[in-house]
Image (cartoon, rainbow, N blue to C red):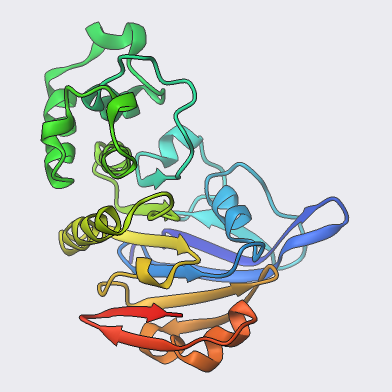
Length: 260
């Protein structure tokens, strides 16, 4: 059997004098489709940073901390197996950086190709175009990213994460700053990507981001996993009210859950 994408055992991450992840044990197989759901301040961002090897847990008896079976990773090698998408703004993008150039820059672990244009191979061009096609974004290849809407840019960012044909995607708040139409278009595209066999770790506090193909939900609150199991068993009004600390009304339609 192949090693799991993620295997954290008794992981604690401390900032200042308090734990922001507190004794977290979590195992995710490489082709699973999992949503990690929690309110702001629950530790979701720290969990992502731990996956990306931007922070490390306290060492202790029984603690282990592996991605794809390995504890030590070069982050650039890791991104070839796990496509990572965050809603961070492109503060350092050039004025005329195009959608194709942003997506292709994943091969150089940069934001943009800059002086790398002569190093772009035919294989890189083919894989970048294929990733853009998967995101229904080929029409954005020549458009400057600064002229794109938030929804268009999110498609390019996900295509960038797919150019290496990774085993799984890690998405942080995928619908952030998107209007209703862009949210729905993106969710339908993600459904198609997962149906191709790509695994998915979806980290969010928006219930609507959890596409029907997600099978498992992990509930995170105050740095601890409070529940982990099948989506249908965990997404109920009582559990969600306890998770978010407020009254929750829940409905389901076409495989999506909606809360208010």
